[in-house]
Length: 279
Image 1 (cartoon, rainbow, N blue to C red):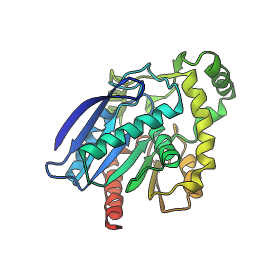
Image 2: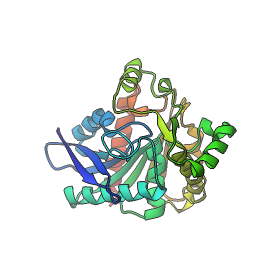
Image 3: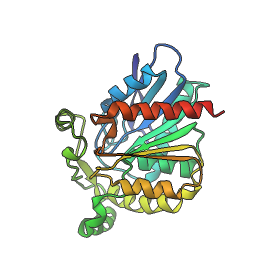
Image 4: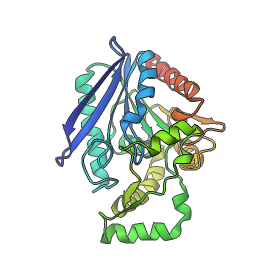
């Protein structure tokens, strides 16, 4: 397996960090990764190895305000900034892996982002994979925090507060939780501006789900207490095109970091292979 990393500049001048894991020979396809809130692409090295062993490449970048990329931690100036960043990264992948099919793969916040990127920008991918999409969360039940985000997102958009993410909800593996807690590139910050933007994005995502036009694999852990599986079920039920919904009994939020991760990643690989066979 080959690992590469590189830096690039966003449309508004931020230095962005990207990483890829590739087989020794030409990959049959590339999975373009969009990670979750507070984390970074380096946490997916083991996923990259599994995909490389199966003949695929995995490539991703640290979202603005995350990992080794620039920008205030957990802040988002506009939703278009995320969409533009993904678009710029897609162009780099097209250049680095010319004439190789590409899949779009998003986890948690990344799941929301890949849904929106397809719906808003109409890109050309062989298929889309979402895991643990954060479409329905406990935030909906916290009316005071929602009101604060709507008001202070306008008045003090750059002010950061703790995201409230409980690391023990990520995985049943204590090693995964410990590694997350002690990872210097992980943060627990979210600005009011970010919160206000995402509160408006999620209803829009459901309203336009019926327009989703690419083959789609949605996976979610049934015991996910961070991003509720019903969000993925609702979205899948609204999609009119080719959509596979796979719910995993007993698994927490990061299904790729659970003890059953081998089964999860095998399912993903088999689905991508099936899409490649569908000319």
